[in-house]
Amino acid sequence: MSSDLLRVLVPVVLLAGCSVKEDRSACPCTLVLDFSDLPVTPVMLSVEGEGCSVLQIVHADTLMTLSVPRTDLSVSVTGGALPDATGSVRIPFGEEAPPLYLYHASVPSDAEQVVLPVYLRKQFCRLTLAFTGPPGYGPPFEVEVEGFADGWLRDGSPSEGPFSFRFFPGDDGTATLRLPRQRDDSLLMHVIFSDQVVRTFALGHFIAAAGYDWSAPDLDDLTLKVDISVTSVTVSTDAWTTTEEIELFI
Image 1 (cartoon, rainbow, N blue to C red):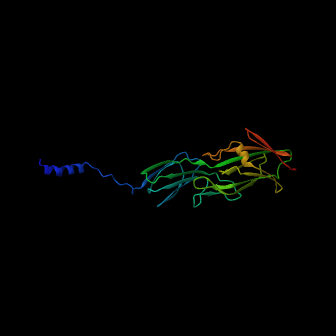
Image 2: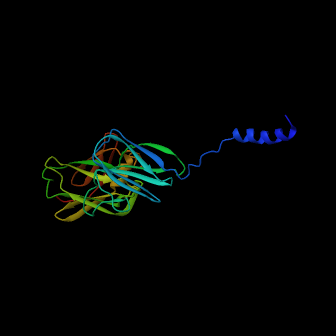
Image 3: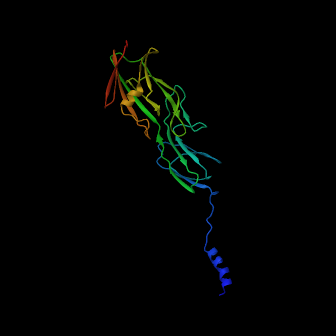
């Protein structure tokens, strides 16, 4: 074989052994959402990103596959309450928190496929207040719980705003209300007789003393025992007891 022919064939052979990697940057991302063991149904799915907006109701446990652009995406799933246009859930003033369950995740922009197990987290505390007191202490007797977190932002963090819920304990002296996730320990509890606030308590501090964690992924429920006497109020759980003096005439 001549040297001239060899010089021609070698580049051809080398070229034949090379491969050109396929550019898949323009290909969509396959987003797989695993809705298993939903705590509530139906739930609202929202997928948002550049060139992508998906809003869909999911009625039962399922596996859902979506073709979405390769861009940074925000995935939110809510159950128990409907979000507004920003993805937030706000509590109307004077109402208790809705029983919200929420999932939120960010999807990277460069993935060909993303599989997301959707775990909805409990975003509210069901607080039970068990009131006792001296004979004849019952109604008219109201309680108002006041706070400064009025709902949840898209990612589940507390939104800042006024919260208030006023209620009568039942005939057995107990009352239950739903509280949203809190930013701090600033919750207040007002005891009201004949439309007059006779004492205000730092409810948030009582809850903190019980070791409650507002940052937990799933918020626990809590029971507080409130014993009202003529001169004091005692708040307790199974783990601790505290008493505050009160000037109250029943």
